[in-house]
Image 1: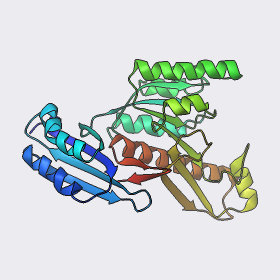
Image 2 (image 1 turned 120 degrees about the horizontal axis):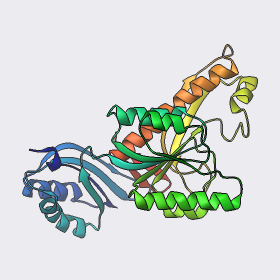
Image 3 (image 1 turned 90 degrees about the vertical axis):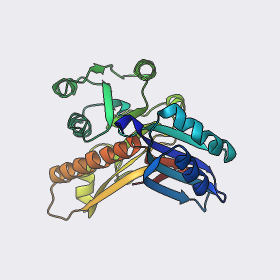
Image 4 (image 1 turned 90 degrees about the horizontal axis):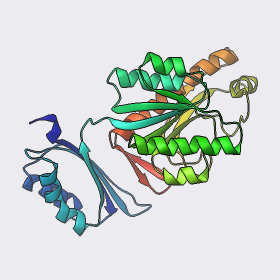
Length: 284
């Protein structure tokens, strides 16, 4: 079989008896072989979630046709894609380089199934970094409401131009408008340090040092109109103590931010992240 006949499928529908049997039967009828399978029934919402990887002897149209009766019977939201296809991803950044560097490095190393056609920033600081990885870079200053609206207009134009499937905020330090959040709902991932909302404003790591924090962490989540309250995709923490300087705390925190954001992007690019209301189902 060629790689083009290896598919990843996700199904979401109301939970009821017979779903797994019906899906498996359709795969068998198509001559398919299930190489990975995960499922979850949510007691909170009564929804059923399933992710499969399937090898088939035929093309996508034939496989879709075999699945169609099951999709219709159970009124499923479903998605089918080739395993490993790079997800078209737009990255927004400001001046911090650590998250952007990790994403670009892992894209080039083949460790992340994304294709980044553009980095868009409200500053010029990271132009050299993007150039090093051979990724186009654009900057537009955001100084007031007018320039912010112009930046967001460019974001939407880039999404259309490059057929973008995911937008990643790699420490992009501007609040997105409710209109942009709504247009790209379920397709924007953000990262922040887990001191929020305890240490707001400038120098959170200095504040953390002064308060003697014992844990440093980061949270990757979907962006919604509620600031930093979107469904959580991934979180990580590392233990620290009183011997750490503010600079050391910042370095540790940036490592966690990079690691957490990249993991969230990786799971999303592999169709392992499904929404269940205000939370996520992660098929690792």
